[in-house]
Figure 1 (cartoon, rainbow, N blue to C red):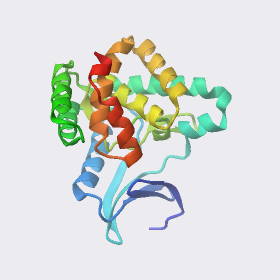
Figure 2: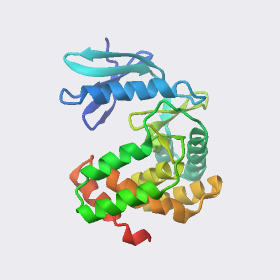
Figure 3: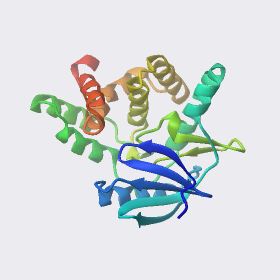
Amino acid sequence: MNFDRIIAVRNKKTIYRDGDRCIKVFNEDYSKADVLNEALNQARVESTNLNIPKVLEVTMIEGNWAIVSEYIPGKTLAQLMEEEPEKKDEYLNMFVDLQLRMHSEVCPTLNKLKDKMNTKISAADLDATTRYDLHTRLEGMPKHNKLCHGDFTPSNVIVSEDGTLYILDWSHATRGNASADAARTYLRFWLKGDEEDAKKYLNLFCKKSDTARQYVEKWLPIVAASQSVKGNAHERELLLTWASVVDYE
């Protein structure tokens, strides 16, 4: 394989371009099961009507696992928002519309969002009483079967050269409640220190999906607790501050 250039460096992985292929190389200590699960998730989502890069192969490169998929020429929505701040609201509208289109899809072979969240809440650095409250709240939330991305951010949306929107990075994909997915996106904006855009995003999502803001907010402690298991120490600390059930009663 010829690595033309590095596209991105993320936690425990480096993404390269090799002509018309994209190669995501994972660090040697990355779980084999997680790599294979990510490739399987992406392959499963290929069966929907969404535009996503197709998986071409899963292989090993110098002892490290790698996923090879189609390379989509274009820019991420995050890049466009930074380059054209005057069009940020327009891009944010595109972003929410795409998320709602994704939530209209069903992918029954994916794992259940609630199962994944219950496992992560159990592993969260929280006292037993708080974990119990979060598990109870999660079980009481409506059960849906919508396609959820799990990390839907502007950096995971590519605008191709012909204007088509592609969604990247399906490692966290599940089937479940769309408002939980929205709560995760809101927290991702917030963790970047982008509180203004976080509020704009949530208002747009609730308006376009006809969802009460209070309903999405009920998901915030649950999502924050489940996401606190991974990530850097600073993010974990911030997420754990959101994991208080009382704040949203």
